[in-house]
Length: 120
Image 1 (tube, rainbow, N blue to C red):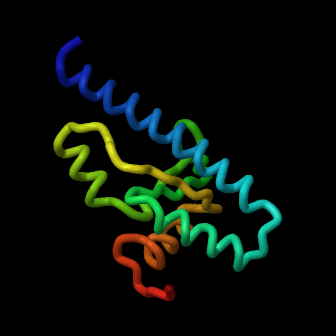
Image 2 (image 1 turned 30 degrees about the horizontal axis):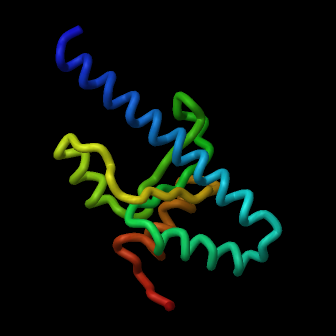
């Protein structure tokens, strides 16, 4: 196997592992939020995002090979720096469940790196 094919395979495996772990984390948060009021769930999500330098929104995506989509809500610079340096992610990673990609994008706008508002 040549170096390019090997590198591509390693990247694919790393992405798959990250996606699997992010899905597990998001599912755990979903379980915690069951029965919460909408306001309490929003406050919980805000805390989860605030407490980690890298946060993904995880949602069902029929167009993805494994049916899961991810969107970086917070920590794009840190993630890109790790990838560019060829280093593993060595920061706390968290994930929240989202209904769809647009909800993850909205969470990024409100609570992510380029947040448009600050209410606390």
